[in-house]
Length: 249
Image (cartoon, rainbow, N blue to C red; front, top):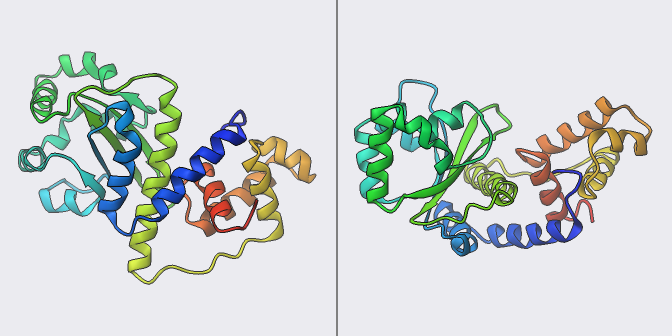
């Protein structure tokens, strides 16, 4: 969470999170996201981690968190092994930060296969979009994309969409863990709760350390421990999850 985030923005985020909390499966997560994002033109959403081994159709499908992509396009994409040449996937793997798809035009133009993928995707309504990479607690990189025929591309949306992606993926992981019997009671130490409380007010690690009379490294250690216990993939989700559970106010 950036230090400049306002309490109003956090409250708006919490309302979105409570909506996702009602999702009981991957399809409902996708539906909640599209309900929120239809105002910017989003028609489809997808998220998943990237296979470490040579990709094949079954392996790629097994790495999905949620999927509301056109089925005919997804079948073609998987059967033809487009993941290897997809400029969106290549940029996500490079962890180049969140981006709107029109920013990749120069890269796609230089690669005939990439250009082919972009043109074919457009035939299925995936004309414009936004993608971001999210790091999971176990070190994997998850890709998140929303797309439609015409997507609003305000630069200020990058942070909002990335935050939504973080919590949606976190929710998907939580549901997977719950179905595997891994759900558990969360117990935070007093120092972890205090660090999270200050983080919810927009303080960075240095500021939290000053307030708590510990080093910046110490503040980071408390935040990392809290994130791990909460199953959160980043600071913003950890704060939101702690608030939702009543661990901080």
